[in-house]
Amino acid sequence: MLSLTKIKHRTSVKLLMLALLFILIGCGGGGGDAVSVDGAAVTNASLTWTPPTTRMNGSTLFDSDIASYKVYYGTTISGPYPNIVPVAKSACTPSCVATITGLSSGTYYFVVTVIDTAAYESGYSTEVVKVI
Image (cartoon, rainbow, N blue to C red; front, top):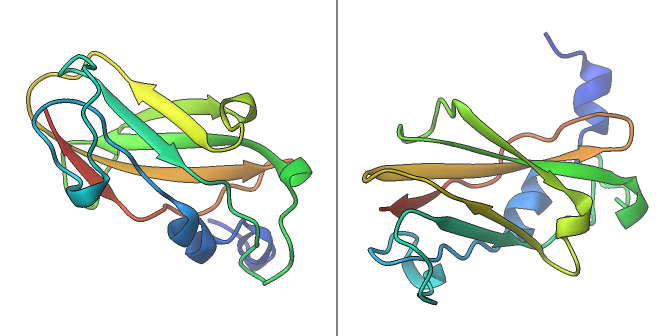
């Protein structure tokens, strides 16, 4: 169970959702206007987002406060998301990019969290969908 202190200091979910700009790459769509086709294999989903700049309590989240990110995904809308892909901060220059490979045919739902240098993890971003 999370303490209120941890929740207060977690990275801003609201601003992460606003800053999150997903681009799902591949044939077969999903994700509305954010979809782009660049010849990537059909079994891949490439996600791109902008790092957040504000914490849930309204204080500034500096780039130096961000340790890493996690991409969660699964085949059920709104979770659970049994698959987790860690994303290094170095993948965020200037926007973050993560490519999930080896996906079978189906519909996948993705969310992202940010982990700060104190090891607090934000809540989920807005969910996006990709059909393979």
